[in-house]
Length: 108
Image (cartoon, one colour):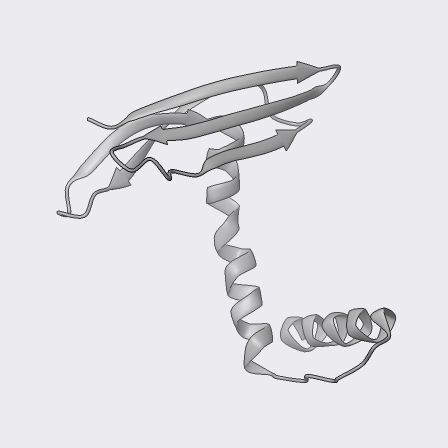
């Protein structure tokens, strides 16, 4: 069974969730999420292991919510990259403009 370590830090209305997987790999990344919407609670989620079996474990609610809605962001990024409109420019506002233009093309 995989062990996970959690920490919650509070300040006024913000909660910082810190989550690390305690596996055999010493280079496991620390996942941190700052939220003023979610509470400092755990949620039970299922994870598919490499052998195909499913394991239930706990993670902070903010991370569970992020993983639920992240699929739409990935899909939008994939579709935006299909329509390549790379303009070489030193001006930051031109890069922002073309990024917004591509987002509108995908959304239309």
